Structures are given as C-alpha cells and as structure tokens.
Image 1 (cartoon, rainbow, N blue to C red):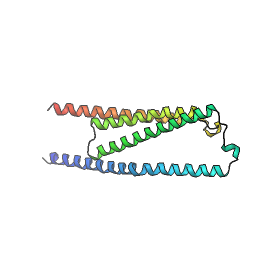
Image 2 (cartoon, rainbow, N blue to C red):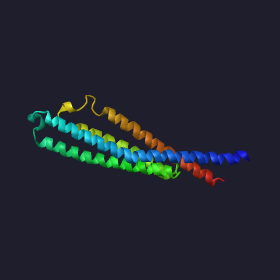
Image 3 (cartoon, rainbow, N blue to C red):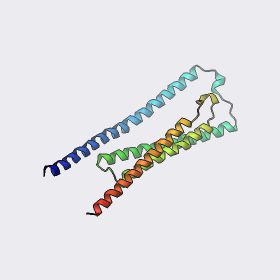
Image 4 (tube, rainbow, N blue to C red):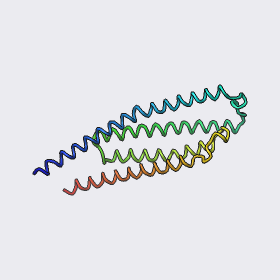
Length: 182
C-alpha cells in the first residue's frame, strides 16, 4: 500500500517540477528574446553609424542600376519573410511552454507546436539562400563559406524538432490506446 501512495506523489513532484522549469523557460523566452533582438538592432545601428563616419563618400553610395534595385527589393522581401518566420517561431515556442506549464506534455497540441517549430527552421534555409544570392552589397561583405554553416544548422534543428513532434504524437497515441484498453 505504501508503494501505491508514493507513486502519485512522485509523479506530482515531477509534473510540478516540469511546470516550474517550463515557466522559467517561457519567461526567459518571452522577455529575453525581444531584449536580445533589441540589443542586436542597437549594435547594428551603432556599427552603421561608425562605418558612416569613417568611410569615404564613394564607398557609401553604390552604383545604382536595375540589378541593384532588384536585389535590394528581393532582400527586403526576404527580410520580411524572415521576420514573419521568427514571429511564428516565437509565438509557437511561447505556446509550447504554456502547454508544458499546464501539464500538457504528450498531447496533439504539443506535437503540432514542435512540428511547426521544426518547419520554421526549414524555411530558414530559403531565407539563407535568398540572402546569399540576392545580396546587393560587395562580395567582401560575406564570409568565405557563405551560408553553408547556417543551412546545415537549420537542417539539423528542423529535423530534430520535427522528430520530437513525431515522438510526442506517437506517445500521445500510445497513451490513448492504453486508456482505451482498461
């Protein structure tokens, strides 16, 4: 009889610990990610101002031709696409951690959130390739390897999260089958 009483207490303890850790991660993501984006934008503005103060006028004004305008337009569209994907990733991640806070671990909703997060990483590949091929800036502004490292990271992360989504979905189905076979 003691063993039956300790099992629910252990499960409650673990579930409460999962809820607390999930809340910490959600709060970190909710407030830390926008702060990080703000800091990156601030650094980019300061670097742009610094380069503008210490550059020749010929370096600042590139030759404006049709190809430059087209590449700049595509670059702006890719930036908008990237912003939408980051917002989808951010919102879905917050939603996932809220589910974990409620104790919803292996449900169809959590599996769907993990799959959406995985697919946002795969869409990052499109953005990386677009930025690489439509860059209107001079060639010396890109690293020598190009976007290969970022693409491999997007593939790995996307596949990992899609696998986790599949795993959560299968665990949900197993739990449903076990509940029906009572």
